[in-house]
Amino acid sequence: MKNLLFPTDFSKAAEHALQFAVNLAKANNSSIHILHVYPSPYIDPYMSPETIGAIIHESQTQGELQLKNIKHELEIKNPWLKVDTAVMHGFVGDIVLQIADETKCDYIVMGTKGASGIIDKIIGSNTFALIQKAKCPVWAIPEDSSISQIKTIMYASDYNGDEIDSIKQLLNFAKLVGAEIKVVHFHELYEPNISDADQVARQKLEEHFKSENISFTNLNRGDVNEGIEQYIESKNPDVLALAMHTRGFWSNLFHSSTTKHFALTSKIPVLAIHK
Image (cartoon, rainbow, N blue to C red; front, side, top):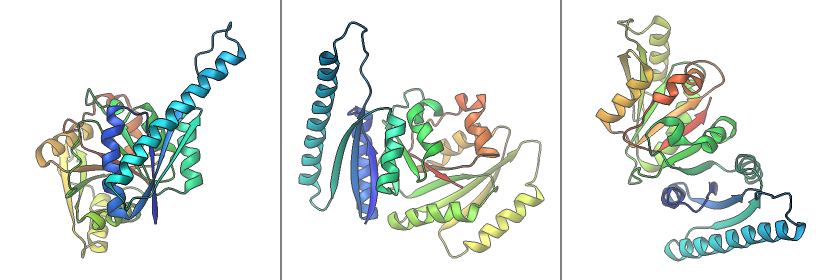
């Protein structure tokens, strides 16, 4: 049985993402480990140790009670679902990564606000840090996104690194839900044609996955970020998949100032994997 890790802060965004996690667990025959992490309280220098201890105890108790209620409701509605819960104290990112390693989870699923549509706010600082550091794929589920059946996965590819392994990761999931993968590569506006190296890479991928439900498209755009946004707006994929690696296309995309202008206006779930 696979294992999903679902960190929650009990917000509406987390509640929405939990339903996605349940759907994902059903498709993957997975259990769900629900984790709530509460931070250290603000400590006034005049606070007594007893007062600080009482605040921490209250946070722990309230977290456990809320998780108990969530687990009870999930098990009533989904009797097949195995649910574990934990409440921990510390920094959210560090604890989530620690539990992800300890539980050997297959996916991390997190809810995100995404109010402005800008990707650094869609994914959120905590989720983005996890995407960079997590050893497993991370799902970022915007609060207003649709969590209906996944039929189409858009994979924005740079044709660099081990794309065969990246697409295989996506394919394993796509087959579970019966989804099609659309691999989309963007090249510069001033380049009328795809480069020879990229053409060779595409042909290699097409040959390797010729028997699978995968299509390959090259698009000519002046800006990669805008190209992705326009594709989402026009083609309406259900999921945007990104592959993170330390150098190259996605490293530049996520760390450059243009990231702040990369809007996912359709507010679709994001699946981040590693090359």
